Image 1 (cartoon, rainbow, N blue to C red):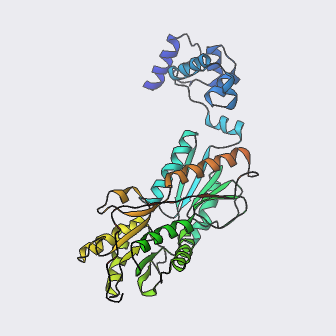
Image 2 (cartoon, one colour):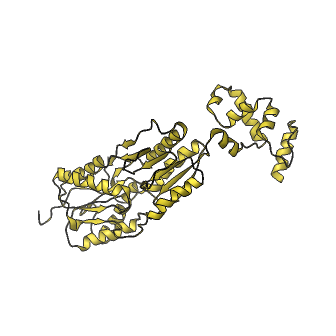
Image 3 (tube, one colour):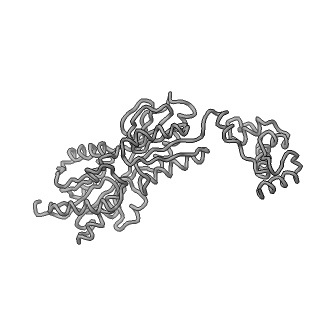
Length: 366
């Protein structure tokens, strides 16, 4: 009540006749007070394209009066006039630090700049939720959907963009990093350092990146003359019914399993930075030096990668850019339709050499 009285008193002090403690300021009364047409006030407050033709001093008057009188545009009226709800849905396996958080930061930045609100749903890799959550988002009248590392279970009646989906689906733009170039760069770096016996962390069974990245590793290994040994290859969260978020603990545990095999190796190429960081900790606890005894390469270049010791050599995915690009593409589809939107946007990875890789030690078998 105090806020309404303050607004009304400000309005009356400025000679605004229609303000009262019980009645909020609406678009028409604000336009009357400014002696402008409701259409002019509307296009300025809603930042419509037509606002570009309105003089800057007129815009300043409108914004100043709106602030003074605590005017807020009617969201539902705006939605009806533009035939959109200014809401989108984001569907992803889990909300965790690192990969997902970095991409979500890019998505959020662009949506906030464009005045959009968003819902986030985490399906944890559960097939029933992957089927149901898109319907739930549509029930909430979203204008479009961003699918992060999530398979497209069904055709969607609204515009959609996929990040790291990899499967081409009609009407959906997929944004992904070139995994073939990324995996080749990582293995080539290790080979140049003299590494021949390389261990691998394969990705989670339900990650959309897992198979396409593994194919890149197999292709690169063949080209570089590296043997992929089954005893030195472990799959993260293999057999888990509902794989959880990637955490350093899993890298620690799987690195211990590699060491327990008794098989010698001089390098580890991990599926992601999170598991690589956990593995480095396991190696140190086992009395091994990184990179003196074992070199470690990650994938993603999450923020922590440049702060752990030793700093992690990794494949950099432009995660925040991927999120911003996905949001931008989605809003373009919402505004202009699906006709001219690209089906695939492939981003180039960058290989970042830091302190976790070094020359290979000579093994007895060599």
